[in-house]
Length: 331
Image (cartoon, rainbow, N blue to C red; front, side):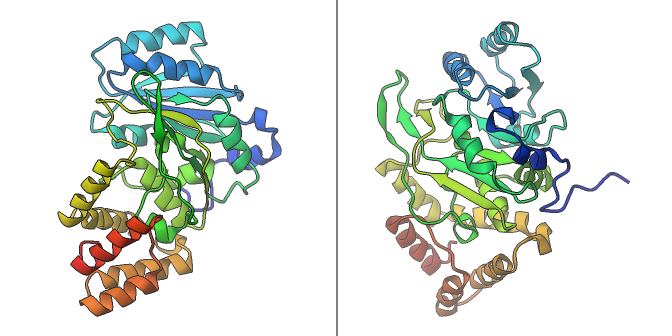
């Protein structure tokens, strides 16, 4: 029989426990990067990793079948930096979320903390240092996740804005229906990585950042949301996911609500949570119960149960759209 993954709160190694005893500079960070035809901007991103004030990191890259000069560029950096600090794997070629999850599940990826990296951003030089200081004090068996806003830049590195600033607490009642930060800003401890590892490889992941937020909060973990950006998020025609900050993108989100996409995303999230069972906190289990029952109820009971569940979105407009979704039973 194959060994079973650890239950929530029981990391598969002592790495996250040991991390509490280390100085921040001693903590090893595994940077998980996925690439696909990223030659145009990849050099600037790797240079920003090299410029980090926290230097104890190893870069693990999963390439999803690049046909440009991406692989040659990566080999050049392996020779320039250290072949032991850059590890290259072949991706599953099933989309960006599956590619990132392939690194999360890869037993060769080791660290005290785990950071997701896009191929076309530019990290601020204190990104890792700031993130580690926020997470290091948490017990090793408590899932913990740090995330932040981003500064938006165009192809030529000109600042064009910021991602939305959220003020409400990052709790499960929010995570069940909304993702608040990009994975490119996230740092996870070992217990949070273990939770991601427990999910079935066959689940249809909407986005790995939402998955991390959902699982961490569901099982009593801690999420730190930093309103100060930690990176420059490049906006260009090749983005798989944009910043979600423009009026056009907000209108598109309303369209997704009406066409039932939000409802399908809720189906996915509920299917992910179901196997966790008792690992969810009692209050979060009640939230799931009320949420599920509300989706199958008449209008007045639906509103009553949704209110009882405690779900919320981060902004006024987001909560107006939530009310509309409840009314139309599209949640």
